[in-house]
Image (cartoon, rainbow over all chains, first blue to last red):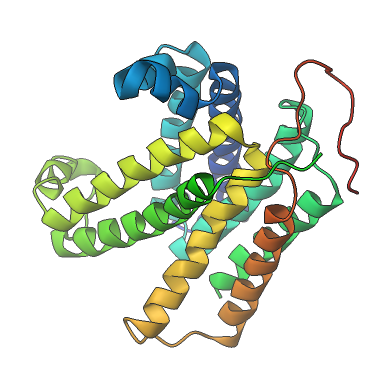
Length: 131
Length: 142
C-alpha cells in the first residue's frame, strides 16, 4: 500500500476537475438563460410558474445543473483529501479565470481589457482571502 | 453602446451577492452544530435537514439560484460572476464587524482587489453579445 500522503499531482487534478465542471455548469446555464430571454418579461406575461416552466424545460439548463452537481460532489471529494484553505480558493480562482475564457469562446461575450482585469483581480483577491 | 440597469436590476444583483454569502454562512453554522459527516454515514445528512440553520441556509441559496438565473437572462456571465465574488467581501466584513474576527493584511488586500475587479465590470455594459450579428465585435472599450 502506498503512503497516506496525497500527491501534488492528484491534489491539483481534483481541484482542476472541480473548476472545469463548475465552468461547464456556469456556461451551460448562462447559455440556457440567454436562449430563454429576459425572465422579467416572461414573468410579467405568464407568471412565476410560467417562468419556472420555461427554465426547467430547457435541456441546456438541465445539463448545466448536472455539471454543477458534478462540481459540488467533486468539491466534496476534494475536501476529503485536501485542506479547505487550499481547495476552496484555488478552485474558485480557477473557475473565475476559466469562466472568462469560456464566456469569450462559447458565449461570444466581449471580454474586453476591463473584464480581463476584473477576472485577474477577483482571482487574486479570492486567493488572498484564504491567507 | 451603454446598457443602463434599472434600480430593480441593481437590487437583484445585490440580492445575488447577499443571498450567496448569507446562505453559505448559515449552512456552515448549521453544519457545525450537526457535526462531521463521513462518507460511510451519509444518512447523517438527513438529520442535518432538520437543523433550522441548515433550512434557513438552503432557503437562502434557493433565493440565490433564482436571482442568479434571472440576472443571467439579461446580463453576461462575465458581468454577473464578479458580483457573486463581492459576496466574499460581505462575509469578511460581517465577520469583522459582527463576529469581531481579526482580518489579516492579506485579507484586506484580497478585499481591495475584489472591490476593484467588481468596480471595473460594474462600470461597463451588462450585455455585450449580439445574436443578430455573430462574430461582430461590438462596444470596443478595450
